[in-house]
Length: 352
Ligand SMILES: *[C@@H]1O[C@H](CO)[C@@H](O)[C@H](O)[C@H]1NC(C)=O
Ligand SMILES: *[C@@H]1O[C@H](CO)[C@@H](O)[C@H](O)[C@H]1NC(C)=O
Ligand SMILES: *[C@@H]1O[C@H](CO)[C@@H](O)[C@H](O)[C@H]1NC(C)=O
Ligand SMILES: *[C@@H]1O[C@H](CO)[C@@H](O)[C@H](O)[C@H]1NC(C)=O
Ligand SMILES: *[C@@H]1O[C@H](CO)[C@@H](O)[C@H](O)[C@H]1NC(C)=O
Ligand SMILES: *[C@@H]1O[C@H](CO)[C@@H](O)[C@H](O)[C@H]1NC(C)=O
Ligand SMILES: *[C@@H]1O[C@H](CO)[C@@H](O)[C@H](O)[C@H]1NC(C)=O
Ligand SMILES: *[C@@H]1O[C@H](CO)[C@@H](O)[C@H](O)[C@H]1NC(C)=O
Ligand SMILES: *[C@@H]1O[C@H](CO)[C@@H](O)[C@H](O)[C@H]1NC(C)=O
Ligand SMILES: *[C@@H]1O[C@H](CO)[C@@H](O)[C@H](O)[C@H]1NC(C)=O
Image (cartoon, rainbow, N blue to C red):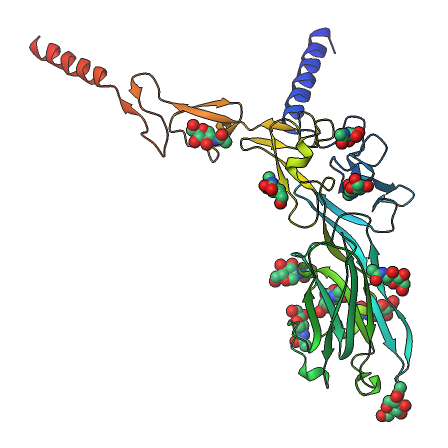
């Protein structure tokens, strides 16, 4: 390879680096791990000191397992995904209560989760009870330390009365959970002599899970036994102040340049989002980058010419035309002056 070829290669590599740096805005702080196994860890979350916003955003990445598994804080809660809109999916346990054929209970297992911060999503999760002789209890504590308890009942005389695909109280019951639920205990009990329905339903189950990740079928009366974990959704936010309170302390405020603040809709704290016309991670310095609306015709309403500006764009018309250049505005129309000249020109030609 001669020197010229080398230079061309270096130039191409530099260009590629510039292009790729431009097309993939940062998701994490420099020098920090952006992934744990297959799970993206965007800032304010991070896996080591200096990489997360505060200890509530600490993800423990267990690299002794292949692929590595992220855990929330130093808990045993596995993280499935983190999104910057304030949602996080974790795995929570299914509680079970199994019976012998004679109707005796065999070491029931409860299910619980204890979170130091970030409540369970009241819009995405439900509490479920599964079984033909099942009472599912839920007791919990909210972010203010208020306790609460509820439950649902699921009965069926035989499996034929269960509607496949419908969680309606016969074989499956579900109830909404309240806002701000931080910790819960789920447990399962029996209300009848389990012997009668033992053949088709040896166990009862209780769990909190994402509504979307659990669609009840008749087969679940027996096969949930093999599922110990199901996804649930938690709502994360920064701190426990409102936007207005947090803005007062500039050093502690998490929303960086070109971003807006909004209050969490479940629990305390606030979240950030890039302002209109910007995209990226609002929690990182320079995280929100200008969107080039001119690059994508779906993002601008320009008829002919588009000029990108910081946070927005402007339209214009080519030479000889006037108007605002917008599809939803005046568009572009030919200048009167030009028309006159053409008319004059034609006359001239005509007369010669
Ligand atoms: C359940 O009912 C069966 C007979 O119907 C009886 O033999 C058994 O002892 C009962 N079990 C319990 C726990 O009461
Ligand atoms: C859950 O149960 C355990 C032990 O039974 C108890 O220590 C804990 O306080 C309970 N938590 C809630 C939220 O009820
Ligand atoms: C219940 O529904 C599931 C999927 O919706 C289907 O695979 C299964 O065959 C159905 N079972 C019965 C007994 O209809
Ligand atoms: C449950 O059903 C919904 C709607 O039909 C679907 O979007 C979702 O993927 C299903 N979930 C699972 C785990 O099958
Ligand atoms: C549950 O797992 C056991 C082995 O652990 C297996 O024999 C059984 O077929 C599984 N049942 C279902 C419904 O997947
Ligand atoms: C419920 O049963 C369906 C099959 O009908 C199965 O695909 C699904 O994994 C079961 N759900 C759980 C939580 O075990
Ligand atoms: C909420 O505020 C208290 C008192 O300032 C603090 O100790 C706690 O860590 C805060 N919680 C979160 C989630 O930031
Ligand atoms: C402002 O935030 C910084 C960083 O979180 C913190 O160290 C400091 O104590 C806060 N100041 C006030 C007045 O709350
Ligand atoms: C945040 O909540 C406070 C108190 O409820 C309210 O006064 C404020 O307008 C809210 N801020 C935003 C940005 O929604
Ligand atoms: C961009 O500019 C247009 C026209 O001036 C205005 O209507 C629109 O609100 C602006 N958009 C943003 C994101 O600032």
